[in-house]
Every structure is written in structure tokens, then in C-alpha cells.
Amino acid sequence: MDTFFTYLTPLAVGAVAVVLGLGLWNMLRGGNPGTSQKLMRWRVGLQFAAIVIIMTAIYFTRH
Image (cartoon, rainbow, N blue to C red):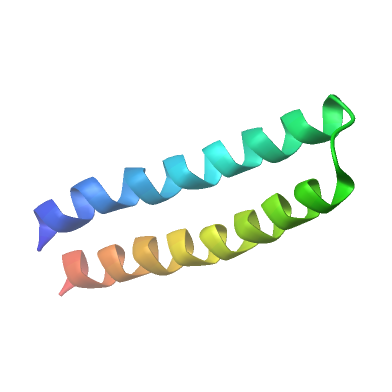
């Protein structure tokens, strides 16, 4: 189980970073505001998922 979280945690954090970067890049270059809004919504969802994954990893490593 530890190996599973060893790979899943950085993957989740990396997904958040990629979506954040894409959203910021789109806003800075003056892209479609709707696309930026959609990317920022995805970021919030991915951050929630990453936090759940990290908290679950901490729970299972403690027990």
C-alpha cells in the first residue's frame, strides 16, 4: 500500500501544478476567460483530490 501512495501522491501534486500553470499561462497571454475559469475549477478539484490522497496516505502509514 505504501508503494501505491509513493507514486500516486506526486502524480496528484504534479497534475495540480500542470493545470495551475496552464491556467496562469492562458490568463497571462490574454486567452479566453472561459478557458481560464474552467482550468481554475479543475485546479480546485484536483487540489481537493490531492489533499484526500495525502491524508489517506498519512492515515495508512500511521496504522
